[in-house]
Length: 90
Image (cartoon, rainbow, N blue to C red):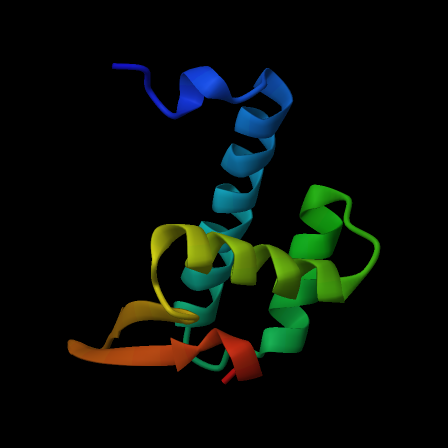
């Protein structure tokens, strides 16, 4: 049986890997106490050479849909489980 990745172009595979890295970085950075979504978006824009902060939001939305996460990023904070609603940057 053919794998999903074998039917994708190399560009598409690289794009999905980059978007997943951005998504994971966003989740990791928002885990930190006092982290603000605006500052995290700005940092990721600089790191990945993205000009519009809204692009970060669209990438997070695509990745969460692809992973089936329903717009949430589950994180561990202080030993208790919390969910951050990515849709509203909370």
